[in-house]
Length: 157
Length: 116
Image (cartoon, rainbow over all chains, first blue to last red; front, top):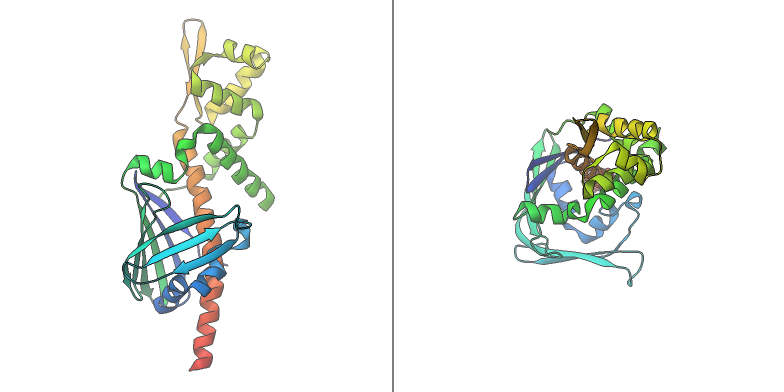
C-alpha cells in the first residue's frame, strides 16, 4: 500500500497537495534537489511523457529547466528559478514557462522519522490559475479529460 | 479538504460517456434550448432527448425549468464537477510521481544504512 496523495483547492488561486513519505526530511529533500534523483521519479512511466533533460541549480536565485517530450523536436520545457532553498525543510521556486505562472512552495516536515510533504501552488490571480490548469480551454478539453479519467477508472475495475 | 463524492462522480462520468449528451452540453454552452429544439438538433425523438436531458440533469450538468408549455434547458452547476475532474487528474499526476519517489526514498535509506 502506498500513502495517499491528497489535493485541495484552498482558494481560487491556489492549491495544496500533501503526502507522507516513509523517510526523514533530509532524504526526501535530497530526492527533490538532486537532478539524477529527480530523473528517477519526476516523470514516471505512467505519465507517458519522459523527462528528456533536467538542469537544476538548487540555490536561492539559481535556475532550473526540465524538458519533457518523446524527442527534442516535440520537447516542451518547464523553467524558473529558486526563490528559497532551506535544507531540509523548504523549497520555493517560480514557474516562468507561462506568463503569470505559479510560485510553488514545498515543505518537508518531520513526522516520527517520516516526512509530511506539502506542495503549495499560488497563482497571482484566478485567471492565471485557470490558464495554468487548462481551465480556459473550454468544454472540449474538459470532456477529453473526463473521458481519459473515465477510461482510467474503467481499466482499474 | 475537498470531499470526493464517488456517487456524484459516477453520475457525472456516466452522463458524459455518451456522445449525444456531450453534444447537448456543448450546445447548451452556446445557448439555452428547449427539449424540442434539442431533439430536432440531434435528430432524436422527444422521448429520447428527455431521457438524455434527465441523465444530465441528475448529474447536475443541466438545469431545466418549465416555462409555459415548454421545458427550457440550460447548463447547470456543472463547474464543480469539472473542477473535481481536473483536480482528480492533477492529483493522479502527483500520486504517480510520489509513488515513484517512494522507491527513491527507499533506495536512499538503504544506501545510508550501508554507508553507516
